[in-house]
Image (tube, rainbow, N blue to C red; front, side):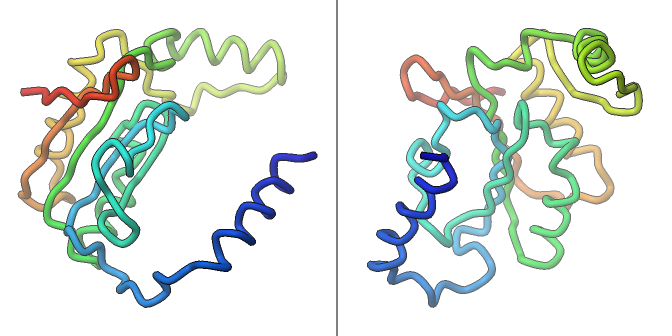
Length: 162
């Protein structure tokens, strides 16, 4: 069976007992979370979030450069007033460089991806610090609390980065 078919079946069960259709549009906890897309990180469970609590923006590495458009919309149109960044241990973004992935794309797809910044990083802690700084320095981002964490895929714990 296709994974999409499994999703459809699961959604039928979910929708049959769904009771949260009256949630309001702005996130109730006024927070935007930027996290890695890694399948081992369940942001809702790890951070104690329920539907309607937060905007959760996910991408490869949890990089804020990739999430800036969503952060601006979240703040300007939907009232979020705090940002949390979550990177994680054993991240795939630690395993390659832009040159490596661009060469792979050229070899396998015969395409040039030089115009794309894939945003890998060699240092996990520094990647969180860099993302915090990028947001604090951005004229497009409100002056709000910004907290960075490293989620430990081995333990499920978050470690605050300062």
